[in-house]
Length: 149
Image 1 (cartoon, rainbow, N blue to C red):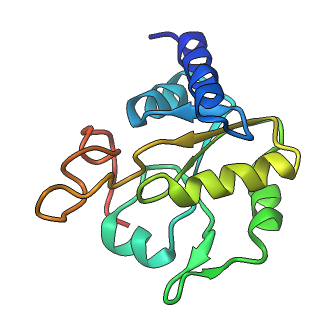
Image 2: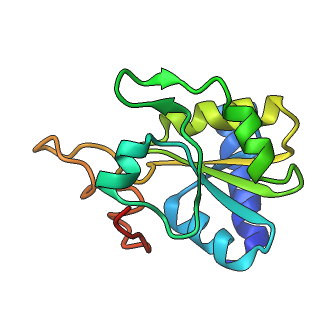
């Protein structure tokens, strides 16, 4: 699948979902964009505890949207994003399951980032029947590169 096809699919998916930003990608699509699009930047918005204990996508920019414990909102999120990611980049936001990254994508679009995508399913994905994450869907279940933080 080409970068153009992935972006077109992502935009169509975003329209179907009624997103207030560019679109949404599946984990494998996000990885393909990171590999094939020089302007692509993956931003992991999970907490530092998640980065440390669950793992991270190699080379992802890490900016907490909410901090553990208590999931306290990071008031400096947009400032930190602007310091680390150019507004001309294609920004791919990832979190645990796709909810915080949706919020981050909305905030980035409001701050003037034009190419913003949410990584659906997130790093760990949905819970399986045993209530465990990381097996059913998401970045890790797709067998995509990750390292222990």
